[in-house]
Length: 423
Ligand SMILES: C[S@@+](CC[C@H](N)C(=O)[O-])C[C@H]1O[C@@H](n2cnc3c(N)ncnc32)[C@H](O)[C@@H]1O
Image (cartoon, rainbow, N blue to C red; front, side):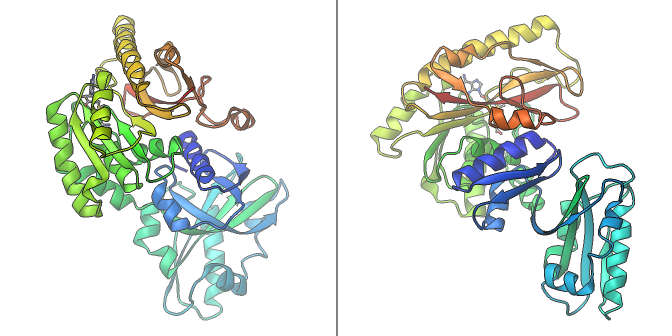
């Protein structure tokens, strides 16, 4: 899972549910989730769809382990050449590249050096059978290979990344099937003709996660009423939604149009997939009405948006007075918007929106005092991860009100992601 693992898991569970897959979480930690799925999945397609998932592995075996044993010891009889060849390698001709990564489900001590020991063991076993083999290991103190390394060494094509997922009393042995296309995400972010560092842009991965969180079927129409230069609009179009994007700022809309023109050509998105217009989010219903009248859209099924976060404070933490003023300003803006959304959203429609959370320390935030701006207009919070599941997994960072915070180390203003459902 990605760095903001709570968001990764929330997104994954929601997408599996939308695909009609029964997903049973067998084991999960802050880096890896082991999930039993009721159906066979198209893993490359799933990988492309998920912004928060770095690698998808297929579990090949589960090996018992005694608590006192090292992972290496538990697997000492496992990696026989015949097992490696049948379970992990597509072909054994030519030079084989393989890597080893270890993921932890619990805090197992003395794990340092384990990928190297396992890797050397596998390498020797294979060399004894006459195979030519190159071993790729995690760098520095890391236990797992970065997706960049897996891709650059073509491990999933020319060999395998063998992953070992270690718990106290068992070890899952798995093989990497797909890794996130980090180069393409970079292109979708940095190669756009227009960027806007002043108002801020959402990373495409996060936009994708938010779009996935509301679980709307593909082909439906979604709205971003604070679209800026269009990250959510582009990612929505790529996920096969019809997108409507509006923003109060005409320069943002001009930038958005340029970006979408570039995006459309690059990713072969048909032109009718999106509609962009200057509009105040407080009366976006007027533009929606117009689009319906000209039959450009039929219904708006959901809203996904990075609403304005207020001032971004890159150096100095704002004073308590400034913070409460920002919350008051945004609260009244959003109240008017949610009232307006009622003019076109149907009951049960969902809204995923970011609101600011001021980061006091690594884990402490000053959060929006109340979400009444939505509640009074008939919108309830839907927990990003089912509360019952979240209770059994206390390491998850679901906030007490069922939201999740996406932050970056160096940012004062983090984004709290809230999902609402209209009653
Ligand atoms: C954080 S930016 C959104 C960035 C966008 N998600 C992106 O990645 O490009 C917030 C946007 O809200 C817009 N905005 C502020 N007040 C607005 C209002 N009342 N109605 C519509 N847009 C508004 C700003 O012009 C700005 O482009």
